[in-house]
Length: 198
Image 1 (tube, rainbow, N blue to C red):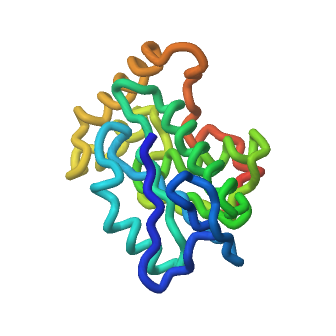
Image 2 (image 1 turned 120 degrees about the vertical axis):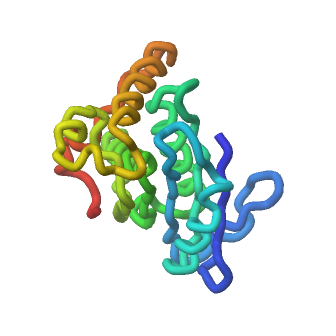
């Protein structure tokens, strides 16, 4: 999937400067980085829509940020987005950013992926990220709790009729996803005991 490595003026340079052929040319000292997974209900948005936010994160943290343009619904199951996030983390590790120095961050659906990627990184032995930052994260794909909430009819972003559509799209994408696309557990259902700080 596409990805962009951004760092704001004044931020530390990425740990490994990468030549045009993809090889590391120079390795820095610190190794701190952010892996960013954009929001958009797994359906829309991407590197372009979130570039300003990612640049501000780099400026504020003083660290380089790798933004991942993961595969999205309806053509790909959520599992593919998690795999793309893991590939982004592996890329950072391969370029001088130990997993223990990487913060995984995301908004909305990207917040869901933040928890899923961190959980999988620990489970697969890639490493335990330094932390997670989830901005207004989606944490449960089951719409019942949202629909039963007394304020469910007041949400300006997701009207009640839209809440039930996302699980339908997720199920359809999982059926079409082919081999190895097992469903991804919602963050509220994960064993969080080994997770990094949030």
